[in-house]
Image (tube, rainbow, N blue to C red):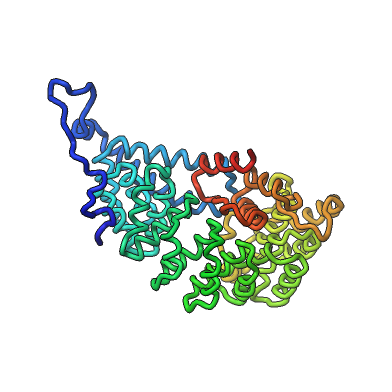
Length: 448
């Protein structure tokens, strides 16, 4: 695959003028640095950068990570990336070696080094590895989102102008992560014939709040491609256009990767009475009770807490009900001693539980004690008003959403970002997956 920067323009290939030997500055040449590098240490840098990125990629959606936790993990990732950067060619040797594992973490490490150094051959190899499959692509996009905009903007511009739809999709995704508008490139991508590029562009319209493209987005509400249809409805809803809500709520009947995303946004965008009706409807269907439990936490209605407490008595719903309770009340189950040990294996059919639990989603959730939660609610329910939506214990407002973004856990923060996105239809969606230090600066800008 030809890289978009391999053109006759030769950008960045200005002739180098070597200084006379007698004027050589004090220090080491790249070749001499390579000779001094401890290769075992550099190999570990490559492996750890890939491993820690994989951990981070999961952490951004976990219930127990805060922004400070994420920033601390980011520092660990960056330390290993720095080690690769300092070792230059030796660092690339091990990153290139690890690309054979075909994992997104390995692609992240290689692409971060390649694009930071601006080496065209390295970038091409990282690009090809990242574009090889849907499994490796997130590592490439994340690397372009990880590096600061000044470092990668030039290369992202080339990707946006590329002939390959895959490259253009990467460019749109990277721009969206930085919350930088790709301009005309996005307008063209929204109606592209290639579904993956079209879907990523439709998503970016919502993230970047491109109101000027909403008429084009509406044309894709009935798109033949599921991803395009979903992201069109999602972006319309986030931009305050209710024409997408019917498509999003229709996703409740499905069980795929978009179902929870549809739940997260639509229940926040609907009027409270409508959201309550949906929760009641889902709760009456055994196969959708799980969505009803999650949805109760999204809506944030205190009237649902007694029902959630009863769900805590059922192992297949207990942890989800505990999280929903925390979403509404802001109460940390462990800190307030409202949790308990997992059910004993002899009294629980583990196999049947595993069939209904999404262990990736629930593995880091606490097991609530329904009795102790019930006692807590009896003492504190007077602090919550029925008919008011709550997030992490506070009525939902712009100010409280910003506070959750600053101090809440990742899933709470993702909810707060959507609430802010609906409150401010002209401001880009806050990116809770961005590097922690960048999020902290963005929060400062929101509150200044």
